[in-house]
Image (cartoon, rainbow, N blue to C red):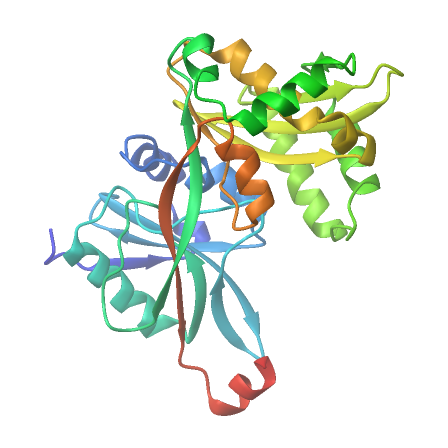
Length: 303
């Protein structure tokens, strides 16, 4: 296959049916790489395709100072090459990327290992939890810290709602963010939620206090056997009542025994990572890839 030329396809040239079949059948399949998802979170994306969609790589790009560069979109933890690439395939794709772009800061998927001498790699951590076992078996691996938080949550008479609306979630999130999301980013999140909810790919869990006030919410999205904890929000009351611990535990309890991998999207923030690890989640490493061959004057402007 290596003798075949990699094709650079503009968005309009991508056969999305073939694209989605390639992603769906990949061992490293991720919902972020499906064409509909990319459509919702990117202003525009192009693609690199090898052969008859044997290997593909989405190119999420923007332009600044007339220079096109690759970036990692919000609400999209990992991308890169699909299916799981060999070292030779990675080199082919990166050679094409670096010949077409002068700057990139993107995250590869966990099955794409560091290869090549161009650019730098930074290790990142995701956290995953298989919930295929019984709830009792999974809960048996909860940390003492998590069990204490759940005991405290149990005293606060919290209740769970399994189908709050996207608008209610977004309003709650905006009200409880220290730094408000840009309107454009809120629109992208709303579009992802609307699409996935109408196709039974997504679900929003909400936690209400004894006073019937929403105090925590989380949006889960499913692709094959992987369920991603894509976005969440917590109020000050929710933090006080340990509502997010309660929410995650309830999700695990309701879905235990299903062949699901709960993807917490990790966190490089120690406190948040502790929350996920406390439920027994284990680390998965992936890599951020960065290269910069911009002219010196643009490099100076970026500082």
